[in-house]
Length: 471
Image 1 (cartoon, rainbow, N blue to C red):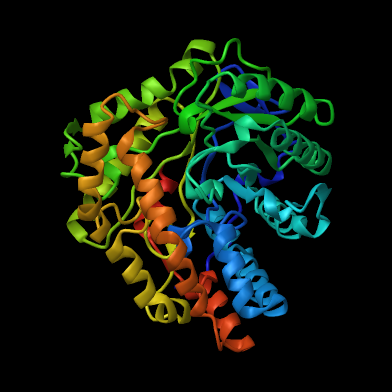
Image 2: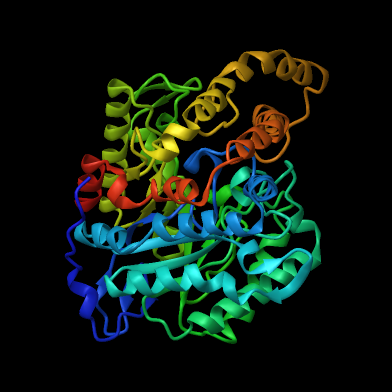
């Protein structure tokens, strides 16, 4: 846990680092090719339950914690957490490993209040501006990613969805707000060459398949009327895995896939091995990647894997399997000249390049709670088994027997039930329990909890950082 060296990459001093699409590759204005190799800053301006250990959705958690702490102390804690979560030392560490891109997931709630739609909160840009500028100083491009949209663009916790229904696609008002926010973003960053571009919608899930293409056309026109130069990074439908609904590619646009591999999660028989009844080896992993990127190869546009990466359990044998899977994915991306952004940079220990240290104030304070959450199985991402798994099997069987033709979008009955049970039924009482753990803490206690996420207090997965350096 020593301080990070600062060795900015050689392209830091490029005369004009602004990126553009040139055929199948990215390059700077003067024609220098650039392959983006980076990480996502999950858990920062779009918080996620498995990344920092809370349950349910971000907005539900924040509301409950605010109720316990009061406004002043609530702001004290979260301002400090966002500041230390990524600072100078973090940028220097990534630069020293040759990482040249950081994807910045953000929640719309930082910039607009549901009670005052279309009114931009200028203070919401303070953290985003800080990290964009910080990364630029270290020669790191940033991709601004709207991860949570009004009404929720997909079914899951990571779009800050308190239900299991993505209402964004059904309400023009939500869509108008997103267009307006991106017009503001484009105006703000149009002259910043270290912003690689804009990722307007993370993992859309438009069941009809008709709203997304038309909305992209509208959104692209709005952004390009203000900023004609920055690249647009457009996710495919069904959580950025399907692209067959798109026609001709939009100029200066990268279509981005997400490429999580089955064997990278706890519910697996190993790698190579059987996962959910399917044999998964390197050939299978590459076949899935090729299917997900067929549109890019057909249209001769760049390939960028916006998210990928396994979950680590702490079991050495299991984590070795994940390391092999990751090595295979990086080799596949390298061979196909794909840019990539691994998920995620920092967390409590499941996926991060850097993670919370055992014995830190945050870990000590919330350890029993996080263990309970894991035991119950309140997160499908990090605890796919848990007590709830056995309890819910009869319900799954009942739905299957009574409604054999019911195949809810996007991934079937099992995930549909799991979202409702894990993230709503268990998540709501757990979020109150999490918030109560803040009761009685003084200002110094709150700052110590937040400071647990500063790089100097965290543990680095050096083998993982080194793997990315060679990726």
